[in-house]
Length: 111
Length: 118
Picture 1 (cartoon, rainbow over the protein chains, first blue to last red):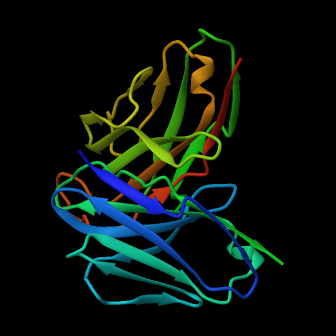
Picture 2 (picture 1 turned 45 degrees about the horizontal axis):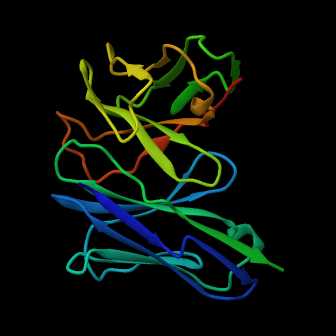
């Protein structure tokens, strides 16, 4: 049975703080991990990670995958109120199979 | 390209009514899926399809039917709506499927349908 766990489930920080969001997974035939940001609308794509130890960056956001320990982290530095959202992760498999999301981390950034 | 198009954007149903949520994509994606999202919760997979003529159940399939007669369309049917089906429904697609093997690809989401069942 697939398992995707995200922690923390919710987080409140002040602007300028740095946050680390965690995603651990147990799926068969793992191939890649997806990160999405969701404000009050459809999720928007952030990163796709396929290789262990290679950091992907986009502005203040970065993410890395550890395929041996089966987890990924998403870092946000110098947080802004616009970073307030739910952050979702989802592992993808080798074969053509379903994509299950984790429960998400709700991030609130207060001024 | 329009991407993934969902209709309607909003819908109110009475208990017991039936309806179909529409999802269409113009990217020739093999993989299509339906999720529901309840307040304060993540996305839960209802049904998915890896190509025309092939569908399978996700995490929460009860009360929903799907079919995939074309690559472009993946409608979700509620046969007898219940208040527990009040939710926001998202359709998502990706190139991955039984033919493309493009499993290293993100999901593309539609804008969602907000359904209320009274």
